[in-house]
Amino acid sequence: MVDSAPLLTALDRAGYRLTDARRAVVQLIVDQPRHFSAAELFAAARAQRTGIGRATVFRTLEVLSELGQVERLDLPSGKHAYIACEPSHHHHVICSRCGRTAEVADAGLRRLVRDVVRQTGFRVDDHRLELFGLCSACVASTSVPIDRPI
Image (cartoon, rainbow, N blue to C red):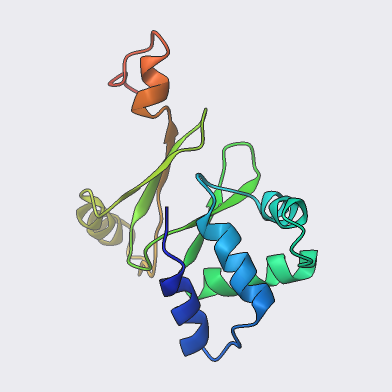
């Protein structure tokens, strides 16, 4: 589970008022056990009878994304999901079955990016990597080995 304090601090430092609605959205975010869509977060708000509007959920997610406190994931289905995470540069490994997510630091990608820059002459300003597959728990429930090549 993620702590709400860094998200609230980021909002406050960026000059956003810490309204009850924003606090409630942040709490909904940190309560999510896996990645979530904006619609799922709004459904959770309605189920908890928070009185938070759809626009507030979407705007708060957008602001937290801009502040680096929440990342938008582009799922293989073409849909988008969000996950609260550290604001430092990292990548995600996402379970296609249960939605469990892990953060991975550099993993040798800086070297690869430097090679791409050398080969193409591009100036690379940013990059991200999202790997999809099965987490160890889901692999254990199947007959497919975890180290199967892509």
